[in-house]
Amino acid sequence: MARESLKSKRERVLQVCELMNEHYPHPEPALHFDSPFRLTIAVLLSAQTTDAAVNKVTPVLWEHYPTIEALAGANVDDVAEILHSIGFFRTKAANCIKCAQMILSDFGGEVPRTMEELQKLPGVGRKTANIVMNVGFGLCEGIAVDTHVFRIAHRLKLSNAKEASATEQDLLKIIPQEKWTSVNDQWIRFGRETCSAQRPKCDVCFLADICPSYKK
Image 1 (cartoon, rainbow, N blue to C red):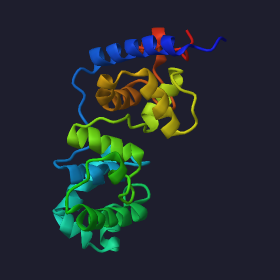
Image 2 (image 1 turned 120 degrees about the horizontal axis):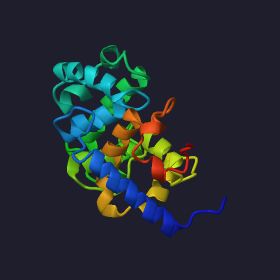
Image 3 (image 1 turned 135 degrees about the vertical axis):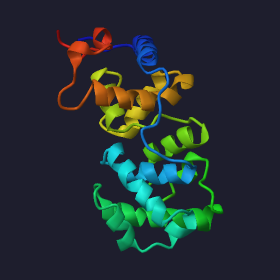
Image 4 (image 1 turned 90 degrees about the vertical axis):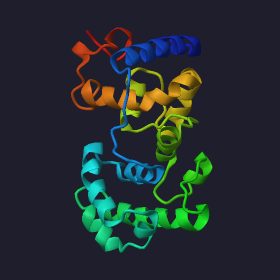
């Protein structure tokens, strides 16, 4: 099979974006939050855990620790107890506290607004930083490649990179910047509803006609 040109990928991904907009015209973040700090913590907690599971524990977390200062002074075992139902809860509990402490000590109590500074926070990688920038501040400098975006990008043959960071760079080359904002919420919903990991619903997929992985 001949290697697809960059031009062809760009044309095909524009079709993907158009169809995503038709099916998900008003994408909404799956995580519940009401401030950039609470968004940062929620995304930090969502690694290798469902958003639904995170949305169950964050109300309890904020009830006990309603401010950055309160979480910064929390006992890690107490936070871990609140988070025990989600994956890697002990590590995440420690990162939540350290994250709050660094925001207070290094950033004057405000969540930083740059990718570089966000990634200095404990537990915050590029994916989390992208989401905080995009959703929390309306600043879009990249595409957050989570498991859904990674899977869809590879099934659509838009990338064959083995790492999320490299997959992001492949997507940034072919998706126009003005469309980056919508990618995550739309592709995550699509991944959950149709292009799931185990049993994708290819027969009813609205991208089937332009998906190289679809076999009739």
